[in-house]
Length: 188
View 1 (cartoon, helix red, strand yellow):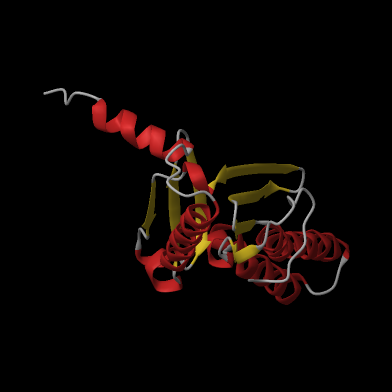
View 2 (cartoon, one colour; view 1 turned 30 degrees about the vertical axis):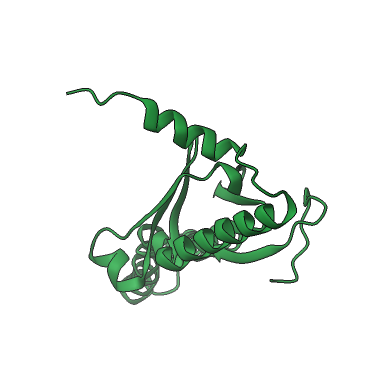
């Protein structure tokens, strides 16, 4: 268990694992960094220090700060928590765009992790899909297979604690969903 406290934490809720969106998933923004640096060097070498070069330098510095600062800001503010009760996804999509999703462990039916593409495979990030009645995507998360494993461990721990607390209880929401799915006819 991690000693992490957060706003909206329920009584008795403990954090099993904390994951971030991969910094490498922002590679598209980071590609602009050498372009801005190259632009500054080129303008100074070509034109020397003059008024147009100063303007170009100011624009390049602002672009450089943005191309480095935005990915770091998004990385620091994209959090995926696995607790003993639920999975919480706090996603920062831009400076003023944030979303919060959560799913209770009792409702988890299936967890799928995938890594697609050479960049994702090289830097070890991918997507994790948590299936309940709805879908909860943990996008471009670091170590997606570790995330999947942590979620399964939390679900198993939750099931064990429920069996110990309430003997022979089969009235969890996830089990009702599984039973409904088993009853559906297969369409061919």
